[in-house]
Length: 275
Image (cartoon, rainbow, N blue to C red; front, side, top):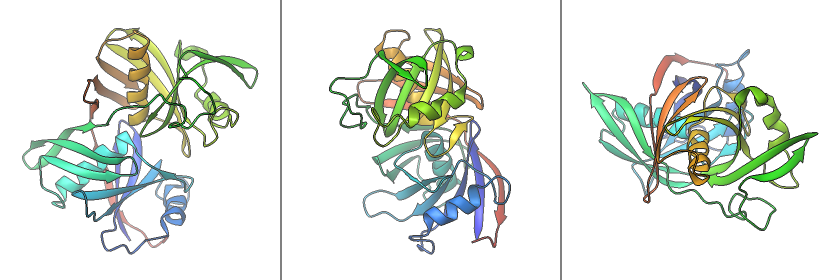
């Protein structure tokens, strides 16, 4: 099986062209093998390219633990670059079917190569039943004690469930996110956790614990969720740079939706007989 390893601000993926559906119904098994950083290729997840009847192309996302993900912000940028650079879809605006509906990737082309891809991430929902969360009201500055520590939670659906904890990053170990993720009394299906520090009105810093992947160098949907939570609490404006351990992404919040722009890089290409 041939594959391409890519990363967006350190969030890394194994991309597989599966338009012939050779790996249909084997996605979870394949992800667990390929994403292992000691015995496989090593990645936070795999992205499979499939044909779509309603969009230019379809993206299937499987986390490193084999679980399905509806959406991935860094992943979709890598996916769009791959589709463009490999001439699968050679358009400046690519419609991509995801588990969270159709997303539009806007390509900035330099000599036939995609650079600085912008993604329309859609509109977040704070409705508890959409996240889903077992509370009656929106989760904004919600005080909770988890594993003997106090947190103020801000939760939403940004393609996938996200919970933002705002404070100084030095006050949190990113691995604390596992306890919040698995707080079934609030989040029956788990949640992604973003620890966020506001530097100023145009700059925030984020570190993320991803459901199904653990601590990652970056999370695109998490960057957007963090910006949205801070904006909702009037801590930042509508445009912000988000610094993560793997780099920087730009997030813009508009009435039409949330737009994220960042890099996507091919690390290497390879072939494996592990599958």
